[in-house]
Image 1 (cartoon, helix red, strand yellow):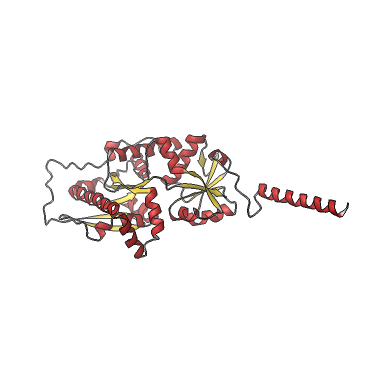
Image 2 (image 1 turned 90 degrees about the vertical axis):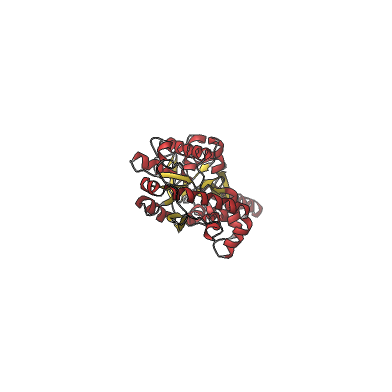
Length: 340
């Protein structure tokens, strides 16, 4: 073989090796090859929790849009649970084929050219259901709603007015929270563009979002039936024999919310004393997700932020939880990433 022909053959073999490596996923620049949701059949998705509403969104979308069932075992798509911070590394190492991301972890990946968004999960679910996605609610317990009814009504008023104050002064509040070291202002602005907090809101719209989420949970097999709304919703109408709280008679309402700068922003006016009550003191505690779940199960606070799924599961097990208002509304915060 002459030298020219030898060089041509070697070049062809080298090119073939590069193509083979890309196809097999061994090269650093190899892409996922996944360009649409249907391409996830037989693949693996990494999630930070198998049981939260965000994973429910993805499972419902896969089922309704592509007929794919996603589960840790025996599904068309395999779900792998891992800490959110580890999912990008697992994706790069090809231990998973896609990663369900949200919050700051998703925000950071948006500017990382090693990854791309396969699909905006929440946006697609909103189109399927024709309603927004409610991801958490404020709940209480029958004995608390009985004993502190008027105080809870007042607390919900404060929540609602504090949310209005934030939206009126959003830039200033975000800047103040950022200066206090709570978060990066760019991230918090991005977060508020994709979420809302419905604290104090138990409107028909919120009730429709609850029913939509529970229907999705029924579809994927997480719950068997929908709770009866009238049995789990708080009513602001007091009893006929109930006397309203008088000025000077103060009641403390203990509240546990997710430790997140978005919650602190929404309740800024309350925490800074801009909004006050003549009758109620709000004792607000911020907890990580795991501690919130434990607190809700143990009834450690008068009011706790939790998943709407907890209410549905509680109803199936004769555990009464009363929904006081909506909390987190996901508008475009749940994103499914693949390798670029």
